[in-house]
Image (cartoon, rainbow, N blue to C red; front, top):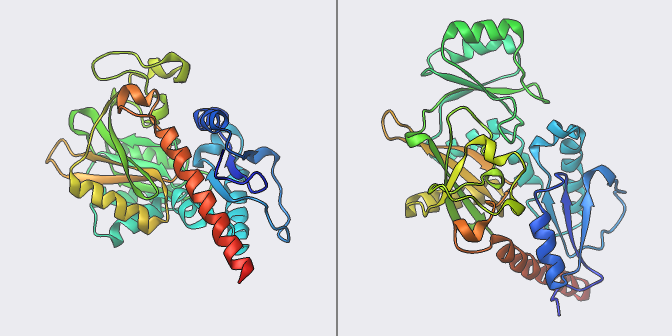
Length: 331
């Protein structure tokens, strides 16, 4: 029997049609009371008292690529309302606010004294050439609200950037972007470190063909040794992208830094990405993700099913939230 009461189900708020099917399947398998709330169908009354044990926020910053940019800003309003009502929210307002601001992520890394690629923040395309002055080339321009590599462009020379600024750069849906040093990756790979409950869960190394900024782990369907991952859990176009993956445990100082980042960002379930500069061996943290898409066919890559552990954790958190609420009402 589930430890989550039927009258206080877990609510999963989401937008992407495919990424969370493994989680839904795991909750269905164990009979956990939960409801799926798709952003397209949602509205709320600020006076309502939501009857959920907890709300798990799975909104994606790349939703605007699928015609749902409005849902990104709507989500902030709903999360704020939930928290004011005392609802337990996993990856709530603070976490999502960090998720949808690359500028905010860099400020957070700077506060923690952790290395990141130097950058300037702009809100007009014509400011890009001046913002790049004094930075090491090549340069990348990244929309502040991104996800899945959306809108990222690389420039090799000041002349190329200046021309793009004249032609009109895409600064994203909030008209804000980073002008940032592009880091050539050691062995064309990045490392993603996942946390659950704010603590280290696993790490992977993703090897890239060098021409893509979309490194979603759920879309990597080939191991480093060339073995194909389970086709039933891979995106249809994943093999065409040339990404390869392997399980990897980062050094202890990196794991500790990742946990510090997540604590400061208010993210309980998510991933941090970092890379090593091929020119000088410097490590740089560069992406803070509150939306964690676990690696496809995880048992074949990291040796266990992270969705099962996520479901276990959600059940415990939901039961604890219900107990805390009952205690508060009885006081």
